[in-house]
Structures are given as C-alpha cells and as structure tokens.
Length: 165
Ligand SMILES: Cc1cc2nc3c(=O)[nH]c(=O)nc-3n(C[C@H](O)[C@H](O)[C@H](O)COP(=O)(O)OP(=O)(O)OC[C@H]3O[C@@H](n4cnc5c(N)ncnc54)[C@H](O)[C@@H]3O)c2cc1C
Image 1 (cartoon, protein in one colour):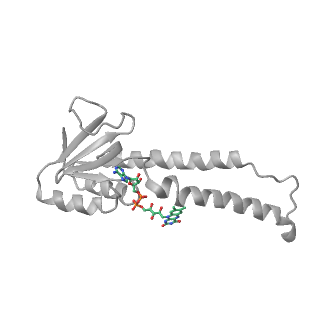
Image 2 (cartoon, rainbow, N blue to C red):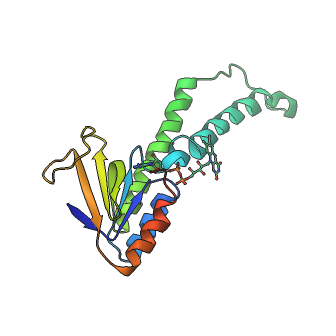
Image 3 (cartoon, rainbow, N blue to C red):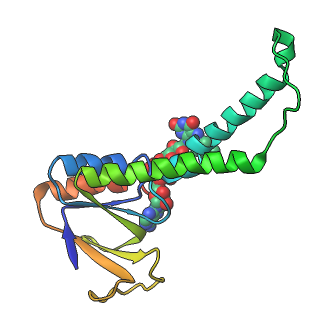
C-alpha cells in the first residue's frame, strides 16, 4: 500500500493542474485518471473540436476563395487525414500533461479510483483488470492512503471536487 499526502481523482483541467500545484508545494501527490491525461477538454472536448473546426474553416475559406481573388481547383476533404492530424495534436498534449506532472513531482496512475474509506482510495488499474480488492503484491490494482497531515484533508477535498469519482 502506497501512502500520499494528496490523491487527486481525475486528470482533466481541474485535476492535473491541482496535482502539479500540490507537487510544487512539496506534497507527495498522485493523480489518478481512468481514461487519458487531460480529461474531456484535451481528449474529446475543447482541443479536438477546435482542431476539426479549424480544418473545416480552412476548407470553407479555400473553397470560397474566388470571391476574394484566390482561386483553387481540385480542393477536397480527406476526413481520415483530418482525424489523424487531430489525434496527433491530442497525443502530443497527452504526453505534455504526463511530462508536466512528472516534472513537478506528481505521480500519475491510469485507472479507476474509488474512495473505500475516508482516507483510503482503491485504484483498479486500466491495464490490470477490474479487481476491487487490492492485494498489496498485485499489479491489477493498488490502494493508496494519504499520510496524516493537517494540509492533507484540505488538499484532498479541494482536488476531488473537480472529478466525477
Ligand atoms: C465538445 C466539447 C467542447 C468543449 N469546448 C470547450 C471550450 O472551448 N472551452 C472550455 O473552456 N471548455 C470547453 N468544454 C468543456 C471542458 O471540456 C470542461 O469544462 C472541462 O473538461 C472540465 O474539466 P474537469 O477537470 O472538471 O472535468 P473532466 O475534463 O471531465 O475531467 C475529469 C476526469 O476525471 C476522470 N475520472 C472520473 N471519475 C474517475 C475515477 N473514479 N477514477 C479516475 N478518474 C476518473 C475522467 O476520466 C476525466 O478525465 C468543452 C466540452 C465539450 C464536451
């Protein structure tokens, strides 16, 4: 069983900056994310949607360019290339979030976190099945308990509010 000062559930725009800040403040912190670092914003919301909107805008502007004296022939959409471009951006930023967490002293764990008591979080690791009870030797899931410090409870409640645990 690993112990932490703070366990942040969710690595979205709420959770990962919170983890980074706690790391910068010198707390032993882990950010647990069940999908991918960056949350909805980076993986499905703001970033991918804006990338696809940018591609669509480029197509539209080019298509209608004749009106402003820019004539382009043979313009066509390649949805697969658009998706690949968007995925490349998302992947780069996923890696960026991982790097920022690591660089600021925060651990990162990919799995589903569950509060099993007031100071213990059980994590079912993404690549290790869905076991709920975590034997300490197992890699399928882990339990993490915060160390008892006065700042700990405060940090945890602040962080967990940004996640849908
Ligand atoms: C299509 C779309 C476009 C958007 N565009 C914009 C925009 O342009 N600008 C803007 O400001 N906002 C935009 N948003 C909103 C933005 O995505 C959210 O406001 C933001 O993601 C919220 O961040 P969060 O960290 O609170 O939650 P989330 O991003 O939802 O992150 C929570 C994370 O917690 C994880 N999690 C949940 N439960 C557990 C658990 N038990 N264990 C481990 N991990 C868990 C989830 O997997 C998730 O990654 C958009 C949203 C959508 C859907």
